[in-house]
Amino acid sequence: MGATVINGKEFAASVREKVAEHVTRLKEDNNITPGLAVVLVGEDPASQVYVRSKGKQTVEVGMNSYEHKLEADTSEEDLLALIAQLNNDPAVHGILVQLPLPDHLDSDLVINAIDPAKDVDGFHISNVGLLGTGQKSMVPCTPLGCLMMLRDHHGSLSGLNAVVVGRSNIVGKPMAQLLLGDSCTVTIAHSRTKDLPSVVRQADIVVAAVGRPEMVIGDWIKPGATVIDVGINRIEAADGKNRLVGDCHYESCAEVAGAITPVPGGVGPMTIACLLANTLTACCRANGLPEPDGLTA
Ligand code: GUN
Image 1 (cartoon, rainbow, N blue to C red):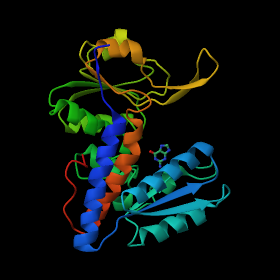
Image 2: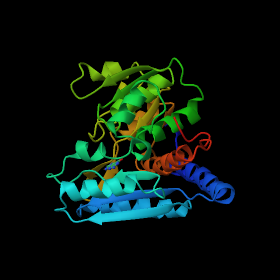
Image 3: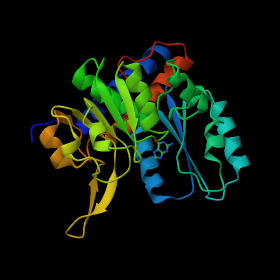
Image 4: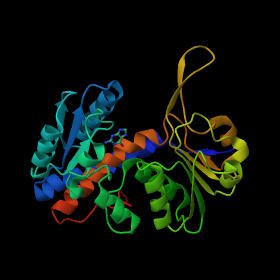
């Protein structure tokens, strides 16, 4: 195993530390405390875990956390009324509506009701358009975390061949836009791509976000390439216990790659760290203050 292991857990801790330092200065110099509102509709167990973790980490970096837990049968009208209230609340700088929403709610409608300046997920259609045209926007947290790790490892990404495997709105598409913004040559591949192995073999940077356990194998990786594994898949191991694996087969990829993110402990911890970074960025922009260095795209 020759690859450098990119430690997302440590990297995320350093991002949170930078955020916390900036929050302290905002309080001391400007008497401002950034605030993040998280809205959870229903009782999906995985969503409850994420929301709890977001709230805890928000408070740990010195920000205000506002949790809104709504019944699973909440009407669209009531949810939109809450979003309007949060849009108008000057103490709230970031709003996150936990997905997936129950089936009777229209996610696009709900997300697009959030003030784009407070859309710390970067899912609002305005932010998607701003990112696509290279303008200042709120950037989705997981791809932002991947970009931070890639910049840290490579310095400049200019001219590198990047292959993003996966075309989701949450990861694949914004990841491709961010890599283009850093002057990579970008290919978006997916489950229907013809001869996927030969496409991936061209990559200096592989970002795997397809949601298929251990699909990308070492034989597909160009020697020395950087492998960023966004996948989090729970599989049953030979001993009958559950195990978390990524979209890349770790052992075989690590033998060939120059650097690789593990699962768990790679990209995962970066997502909430970047949510906190985005909340801080939104707060600075709302108050006409300089944005934090190294925490934005
Ligand atoms: N559910 C799973 N991932 C995410 C995310 O990044 N943002 C939101 N709002 N919901 C999610």
